[in-house]
Amino acid sequence: MKKIAVCATMIALVSLVSMSASAQSQMSVGAGVDIMLPVGSFADSWGTGFGGTAEFDYVLSPKFSVTGKTGYLTWSGSNLPTGWTASYSGVPLLVGIKWYPSFIPKGAVRIYGHLEMGIMFGSLSTSGPAGRTYPFASAGSDFTIVPSLGVEIPAGPNGAVDLSVRYFDISRKGSIGFRAGYKLPI
Image (tube, rainbow, N blue to C red; front, side, top):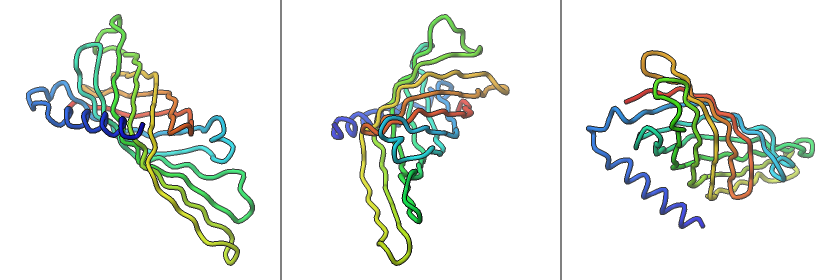
């Protein structure tokens, strides 16, 4: 599964990079802050996650855009014994597609569906009370899929506020995420 995600990510990145410079009016970049609420068994050991992400959009048609996203996300351990700390942090590398319903005109408030997938390059670290244990750390990569619903609200001459809610599945470690960002055409 990881090999498929790596191949899909690489193909999408090569496609995005090879697009001609004449299509610049069809491109936008944005940045946002993320809050992630763990769900399921992931919530048993981890608290609320925080981070930031940057996104690149390329408009294929009035109804579809392809996207690339990266950033940094981190969760702190919860329900730990006294003196123990833990954190799970990672850098997602995602590609996706956005779908805008046809009944919403460009330049107005636009609702969208978004599906992303890729790899989360993560690390886990723990430490205990001084003198009782040694610190532990590990790193790896996990297949990640992120379905979401969002809205873009025009703000400023060309920009838009981008708000979304999503389900972030990192190899069965799930979080419901909320993202608030701002995007500008390039």
